[in-house]
Image (cartoon, rainbow, N blue to C red):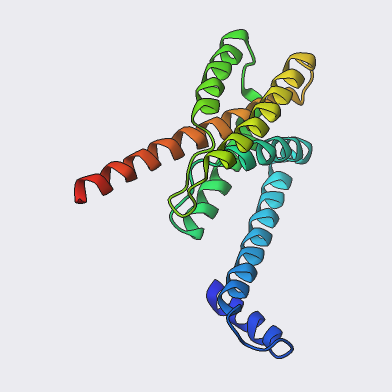
Length: 193
């Protein structure tokens, strides 16, 4: 269905632009734009339903900033990605306020984040990063994680801290899942050889 819409949009665009080697790239770009639009519109509807628009905006901002640097788990298909992200966001927005912030949780989160900083950014089999790129992303991740934890400690008694904690926690979970998935893929390839 998505492919059908993408083809129609691209055909209309190609009436103006000649069809050439960039067709596949344009097709992919339009498909990404459509997917992102559907994702974010769905996220906004979930936030409205859960009556947590401010929490959603805070969570999404911190999560996107961190996830951009650390990479991590990616679903195998756009539908899987959509379902996993919508279900996760619904659970976080609906039940996230019940998260009990205490020193044990924050200490555990710091330990988990330290591990994630050691393995990030997680290579995606479709895009393996160079050493220079990894170092650059790791520096950015360190700054963004550090900023998040600084805000958590400064604003400890604020209502928005829970959303920052959820953002860091979800980013960490995605890094760990991506690391495990990537390592498992490496081992499967080794067995086939």
